[in-house]
Amino acid sequence: MKIYVSNDANELGSEAASMIASKLNEIIAARGEARMVVSTGSSQFEMFRELVRENVNWQRVEVFHLDEYIGIPITHKASFRKYLYERFINLVAVKRFHSIDVEKNIDTLLNELTSSLRNKPVDLGIIGIGVNGHIAFNDPPADLETREAFFRVKLNKECKLQQVNEGWFGSVEEVPETAISMSVWQIMQCKTIISVVPHKVKAEAVRLTFSESPGKMVPATMLKQHPDWHLFLDKESASGVIRL
Image (tube, rainbow, N blue to C red):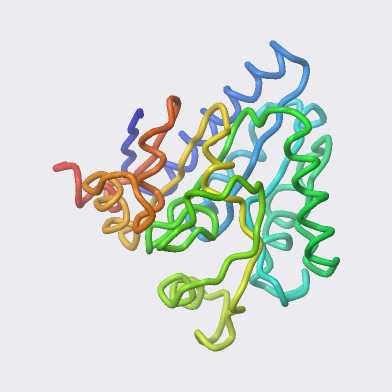
């Protein structure tokens, strides 16, 4: 584990984007292509803003995303597909974007995503940490046993509240009950994981990630077991663990 602490979210976003671009360029130089998984949410705004400005041969990069709500269209402002198209995919010419199109039959969708994801190893995972300590939509108590790549999950109340507080929904009642999520086990198969975790609202989740043993009640603790995990914090998100 390597930890990087920036002054604020803007600086964090720039530094994380620089590392992501550097890693992708190294992989492309070595193998001719790269495969990455990306997360969404307000914590990733600054990183994506800077990442699309980086000098990367995006036509050599295949992109997956972590999760998507079941039951809302791509036109909904909370749709993670909409988020990624507007902030990333439509701004760079990636080789392929594997969209979690929940309008399809869900079982068919899960099979298609799994086949595509496991066709080759995933080089890089950009994995955020939620207010409740989740990674992707693996809310506590997370299923750490499943070896499925993507599966249906039920969102807990704290997760739903985070979505409301970030402005994606008007009330907790509007947040869908279920979603498609990449599993914790599958996330851990990424060769490198970079976590972009700014803002004061994430301070307690960061503290618990450091203080708790790896387990289902704080799913982000599992990242501590990854051999190549890079955690980007700002002064606010690091305030519970580092004296600055």
